[in-house]
Length: 385
Image 1 (cartoon, rainbow, N blue to C red):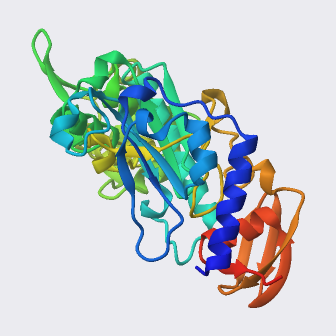
Image 2 (image 1 turned 180 degrees about the vertical axis):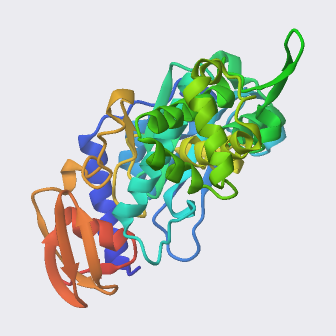
């Protein structure tokens, strides 16, 4: 990045912060703060800062105009101490991170920025669903990172004191690690027999049971030949096994509804294994384990700007997550309404703020939010005046 580009972005970041009011996280005085300035050479983070050293957050942002801003998930007795052991850890928020370009099936070389973020939003919807339904958390803070994905903060007092291993167990649950036939199916003793049962009082057992019920409803809504073909589409389920499964669905639906899967023979057990895999793949969330298990993690400050895109790090109300548009909603008003001359060095398509651009090498004038996005991502330099 050339010096004139860096100076331009730093100045416009300052203009944004002059027009903005940021709401800091709870207990900001007990948190460590960090930031990355607009410097030449290797990226260097300034950390181990407390509010006593930074001053009021809004004033600091206007004064320093940093490229990136972070605060700690942890709370400390002395957040400004240089040595982590001397800070005096109290507790930490439970933080989850979803990076869109790390998701299975996403290829940053093939998929557009918007396509990757759309995949990330599906994962964050799964994550929020798991946290609310399976863990009972009601106060969640969902944040678009301004870059590659999303963060979710849980600040319930009951989780803030969890250690790394306890947080790792939560990660494993949310990612569906170890969820398989052997871990889910229980054997329950009846009066004279033993029955295989899917537990349906909550958790992954309930989710898999719901998938089974939805599938059996689908079979019942098909004619027999269609239902048999549907069953035979699964690996290792042939005609005879499909017949036995369908007989159980028709004759013993109430038992299946109660969780009892003893009827249907080996075929229904094979079917359950397929449905378990499908349920985990569709309802788990691909969270980044090191972020959740790190008690000392620094995380982006909502309301700040992401120095790699020029987009806002923005809190998303829970009821607006599904409708959130990561290519429009985080575009700062500061960067709207102006045209800026840039020199494109990495041509290609750009989609932002409900507009699409296909840019070639060389000088061009574009809306400022596009110019900032391209300059921040290293795809353009500020045009010469």
